[in-house]
Image (cartoon, rainbow, N blue to C red; front, side):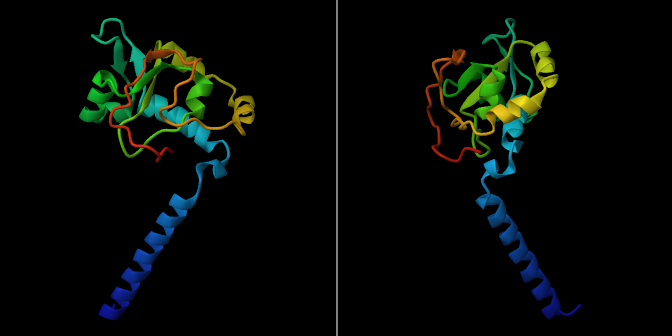
Length: 163
């Protein structure tokens, strides 16, 4: 292949990547129906889940893979005063946007793994229908009905950018 052909191929590839990135960034998640609701559940459990543990100094342990794989996120999730730590409530979790570019503003805490296994047995069809047009909450929102284990100081929080 000639140098000119290689250059043209590289230009097409780079342009394709830019176009794909622009497309991905410009698409609101709500366009994908129930996917954002399920993605939030995944994010706040599998990736960033906390579990109560009375034997731990602060009463919490981590189980989410995203926390386990990051020393900084581990320390932030358990020791920082900045984030909210809320008792797990399925609908609340599914409506709460999250951050992918910084530490979390809110973590949801399960009581035990039995609670998580119970969630896995949920018939999601009626719940997704119910929540389809419900507004999403910002990552750091707190409401009167929340079971706040700790109310965050909000120190260092970026505004905007929730997914």
